[in-house]
Length: 615
Image 1 (cartoon, rainbow, N blue to C red):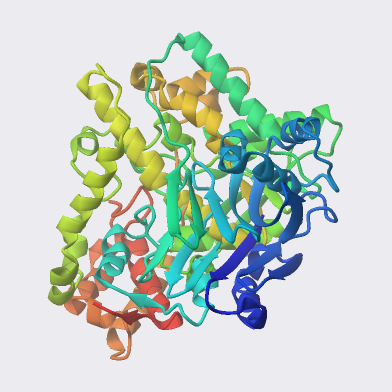
Image 2: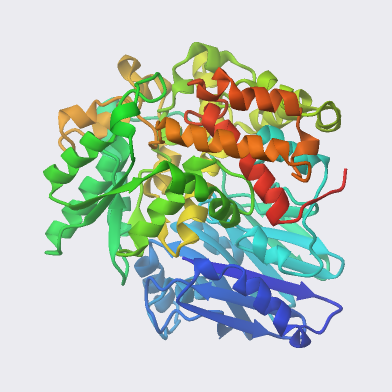
């Protein structure tokens, strides 16, 4: 993967602004530690940082090519998994290739088909193409939003980048927050409304969209969305199709010129990906695939089963590693380093995140990167096939809000009265929820309960899954590790979207159709294991660390978060039993300790980025 950045300006001569585009590009250097490049003309400046995965020599960027009496320059972050097919089709149309990189294939595909090329792509991507003669910039983002892309229009300057820090490196972009941005942080966070860049006047290009910027201005178009239609296949055929799609996707995503590994928790989703990957390695006579799992010092003593975490991962991961004969490593993290990593994880994301759920992945990725450059993950299966508790808990199903948002009233009580009046928490959340529900593609004639489950699925795919994809991208790319997500293959997502709920949840079993698809691939005990989410620490030492840290923040008159909080309520949270609550305030994992850590991250972010409130 890589980091991209760019600047188009109708007034400034950008040939005299190399230092600025260099700064924007250098801001995302962690995403591309292996190489970098700049392309500049009077009207456009394009930057790129490269993580070399395929074709070290032929994939250099920014890449320029001539076609149709025009000159084009691309900067691209991503990976195409159908490169050979596209290359053959383009070659048949007369195109010649200087290498075998997907970058060159993507650029020539755009030259040949323009925006229509997006429908032909199988992959994860965010890219920009500048046409010098037309003075036109084209931006596009993959269907599910695996790769990030932000932009802003500041006077005569149109700026884009893989991460917010790239835009903030431009002198025209200020780290300012208005009331809506504050609501995103304090109410929606650690999620984010699609298209929202949080910082004032900053936007995100939404998944499945492309954008064109020229002298006429900005135009934005949707090229992909979920479509609801009757599902024609019976259960047996459906399971076979799901199994084939997943196996094909994993095989495609193993292509690389660098070491590839798998992230293995011992759960259904990651075990399936690892099993298919290990099989490909064996067929090709390669050494056993390396696998990694994460655990925490003290968890063997302090883990207690709950509705949201029914069992610990460690024994299951080792069982699968032994069965598949992988080269397995367990990464152990202690409470102190987990807390210390809260700051680098904010820097990686440019925003407060999922607290230690983020910082643990950052530390985990850093260890993996010592040996491997690409990893395969089981992320997104729960959204696609219905694995979360809110797919089965009646209270969540019938709640008229995002089902992963809990304890909103308690969260609001932590805010100062002035902030509550400014951001209108209940109204803001309700507005965002209604926007999302209105987008749901309906199936005419669907009975009410199935229609509601379709809504829950849509909310999970378009509002919750982006939180986890964003987390995975930022924490891994911050250390130069590329993590691929086979369950986000759009063919699999499109097919699974229309599988009837009674088939997905047959016999009241979560992800029943996926389990049927994996019979014969996984042992029965793993195949029917109840979902357990990404592991977190249960060590009370971590709670103690974040409690004391938060109390120091509250005692510091200079702490920027203090003016946003109801200090007595937050102090009560820090010293009271609520800090040990097992009821999540967000998702499945973010309970009392994570709520305290989230507030710490907000304070770190306000300090580190020198945020100015413009409310």
